[in-house]
Length: 411
Image (cartoon, rainbow, N blue to C red; front, side, top):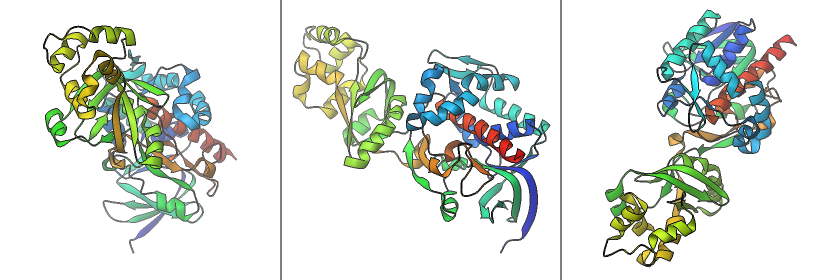
């Protein structure tokens, strides 16, 4: 058995992602002594990786509809967002010296000269100024007694038992395991009777059984300015054709509905609209242009400016008869079926659904089975689309949990 050391603390936060770091800042600013334990060599690993894709911190969508992006959990997130809103996030970043702007898509970005590492560096410096003690390469192993935490120093192998007055666990979900977000904490929670919803991929690609010919000829190719539909949901954006299927913002937004359908029938069909800016009449009018011997590829490029992967995609999905007349071709271009067989694996997903059940928590995000222990971030059972909603959710739940911890410490 490894050597153990015992330590008492006022506030311990396990997990150095956005939720944990913001909670640490809020608590330290309120005068509490805060200690952070992070398993990786540095904090914010997933935060930095996410920043490589554009680093949108939040979204400027009106408050009236922002919370609806969290689906069934919109009521809870209405409270979280009121407490720490996108506007509050922008003020927080500005206070760290990182100015932001709203892009044409409504997403909130730091100014071009600010990189993810710049924000994280300024943030860690602020925490240090506030007296927050940061221990990296310290992995949470589980609970000890009614209030204790078992922590292992992964460099020395020594085990530490910490007895905090209040604890925040912000260990992440189960996607991008290389950043430390691997869901390994679930058995420890279930061992003390905390119900957890199994993890599922969210914001991920969808698999389509392309032929070997299609995979070789197309590989990865973008389809810009399209609309993707599933049921009553319709999402505009850019779609990426890949060797395994499709990915991109429209696919990510439809992941919850696809996941539900695949669980029932093991198949689902996305409908692709390749010319969403044209009315049905305009589309049909253009397709009635005489072909004059042109190939389908040349004809579609001439009258609709459709890129080269489209004819190959049409041949892959539909019989030749579907492109024989202007009417059948118009219908196909507007309702091209993409038969989805599965979602991509959990570790490839940008985020996850599942985690600690809401029923296990008080309104302050404290575990009912373990008073004094709070949960925030992707450990909670929620999901949201990309576009700033994921990071905002982590920040807002971290701020909300910090508020609950302060009330608990006062009591």
